[in-house]
Image (cartoon, rainbow, N blue to C red; front, top):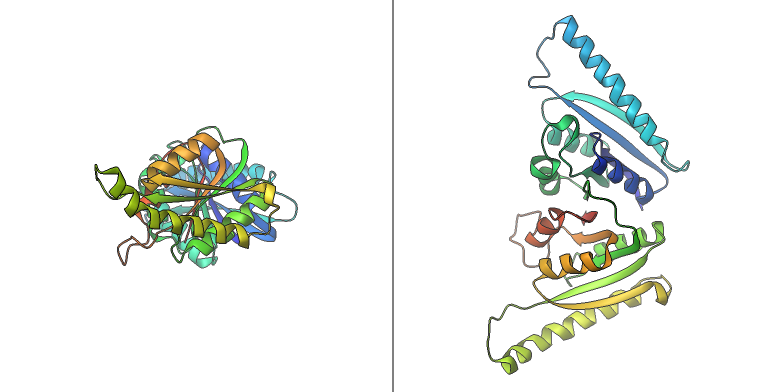
Length: 283
């Protein structure tokens, strides 16, 4: 699915789960780089020998932890680990992703570990906004066990990329694929007949989006389901995820309704910041 992946590791349960899910989503023969950032206030500052020794001990400790985690990867993958001393976690992850031409950056969204700050706050936010590739975020909550991948399809030009990523993930995870489209209700009208009349073209478009998506996937029909929902996309997709507890929710970084120049739309941001499910934001 992905050939080159960078997975941030900070010792939290979320980062471990993100790395393991990244292993599953990496194509045979692909490479996963596990990365831990030892964050120092000023990495260029000359350190006295005692502090340098402590830094080296920390590097050895984190390298050993990543080597143990790499043991969970399939034998078909190349997994390497690196411990970098730097002044900014997010900037370092982004630089490594660009230098490695990464197709995916995976990270946990828990608050523990060496980061000393919640990845869900600043680090994951910067990854979502600035990563040159897709981003996988996994929280510290217990991983969902349902073999389901949900593809959020909005009919925008990014729909094809989301569908392709979701189908490949369903194959990799041996999961059922749920194609979801939300008919957005934007008319706060009290006259039901008028509301229905305005909504019907949107419903028809949604049915067409789902039908075209189903026709294009190669999975057996019994492994594909369509869900046509109505309401606010973020609300309906959160509710669907609570119902299905999917192994992965796949969304576009932004749809047709985003402002030009913004890499991340409001729905993707909301879903990525809602705990309880692994989210793959497709760039």
